[in-house]
Image (cartoon, rainbow over all chains, first blue to last red; front, side, top):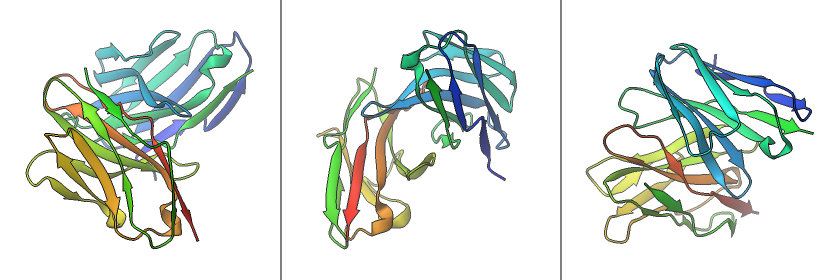
Length: 112
Length: 114
């Protein structure tokens, strides 16, 4: 089984809908991250969490919110989806040293 | 804050030829450096990392990178590429202390042709 899983893997939705992307990990890591990938822009950090009660905004947090339900689970929500949130979303984890991140397979989100 | 510049968005190369993917970074503090690879329709996989010690770092699949502090570079090299190396490659940096997360470059698409 994969160490970092993301659900759903693909999602098509309409403008204005609320969407939740989920991430689970079995690596026992404290730190979890959400990134979005856009062609030509690389990966940009949306939110990160160093433990269940420590959640921080990344460089592009506007329009997104997160929930760290447990050490192993970190969810990303789009309260009211808009077309420019169409992207590939990645969850990642790292241990407390934070030196190496392990990525999930990604969720491809399309907002029409 | 840190920033990463990958100078080439695409690099076409013939099979068995050598390749270098360039990465430069900017930071006011010491950093650790990484190269990740993304194969088509997959997540990111760590190729190699520099934390300290020898400036020449060897990674998986025959790749290596050299950290050059004076030129703030961390170029990725492979002496002979295969078709299977076709992928997107991302350079990333992270501060070596404190509360931190990775900063990625925009990526370089390596296209290996037969």
